[in-house]
Length: 345
View (cartoon, rainbow, N blue to C red):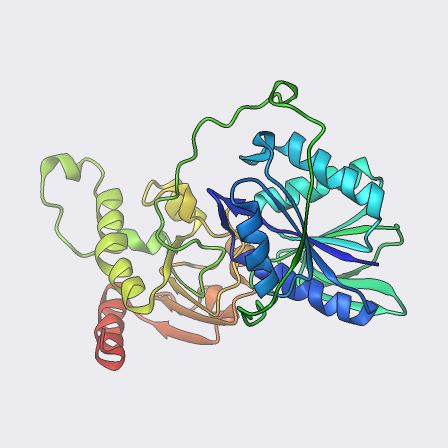
């Protein structure tokens, strides 16, 4: 009846969102009278397993073989699938990142097990798992369950609070070897490029996002070359000189609507919405974003939403807890200055 948690890693470091998955697993394990086992594959696996112990894992399976040094679906799936077939844990959890979704889905197929994706709440009812997940762009919540021997569950980032760190906690570690070699893997990982964003959108507690309204920057276009596409130039300047200073004061990440990304105002990595990142920050400030349903699907779960828009009828105001009807280029600089005075930053 163990509960397993895959700890996602990158360049020998754990994805902090994995500690949230450990919190969700810990609550299930407590109800089962069981324990939590961390699965750590790749570079610095033993050190990361020790860290997982500080956040609630009692046991850990690690693998340091060369074939799992970098994330590759085939090798990771083989390790997880073999372990699940041998040990038959009650649940296998991971944060619902792109890798977490891919890996758990692949292993669930190989073990003919049930998969519940993007859970925001978990509970046990007479030993049966009940999971809540959003659907229809977050307008409704679905209640899901599974009857399989092992149930795989991905949990939405920031839906569960990471447990407090206990630096004195210890973890029992067992080492695994893969049955695969480098020659068995069809995909080679050559290089990884870090995102240009300082704060990962899916992990950020505060997000400042801009939309199509960023092109309404009153600043004069400085040259004929820039005047060839003044809306793009003005919007880019707005993101850089209006939104980023506010983000810097609050320690926030910068996001964007699909309209802003499609127009070339900011790279895709910043897109929030149905075809971008799904985020759940404590505070989401939408600047010049009308609030199309596709955008709402990506940020509806934010705890507090603030909307700044010149259009008092914009749909975003129906979702926001606080709304400011006004020009973002008047409001945001004033807000930034006030917060600098308040926070002393």
